[in-house]
Length: 209
Image: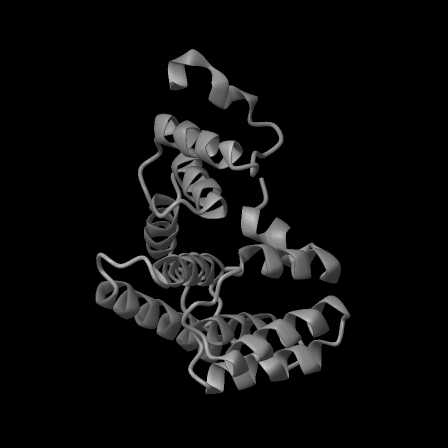
């Protein structure tokens, strides 16, 4: 079975990659400046048009302004060489920075709703992508246990892709002890959010409930 992430990124067309980016980006940017917002939106538009150099340049401009979303998208661009030279170590550093900034902001906004959902969405994306980095060895040494740790953290925050990845780890004993009950539970959670995987009918069996 191929890794879920490989199916999602490495083997997808540019159009589908753009859809992935757009669907994972929070629609409300309560704490962003208009400039940051503009750069991110322009970058996504250029990405959808296949103009990757312009897209990545706008993500970089947003990142330079301190936007966590800009940093996240610029980091992913660096990792995959979207309109730029591949730089996996730097990409990993950007993803780490996004996670740190998002955690810091969430702690500052404890008990408040303004911007909290935006921060959490960015945090979940960054944590998930850190898991992918450890899983694939992008910018860091491969580490199945570390990949599981980050996937599980993002899964607990409700990300369906992370739920599938964490389930895969439990299913095949990668980075964690094999546990089909946990695997089935997480696969079901992801399926409930519209991210069900083909060939997973076994998760509905009563013995895994």
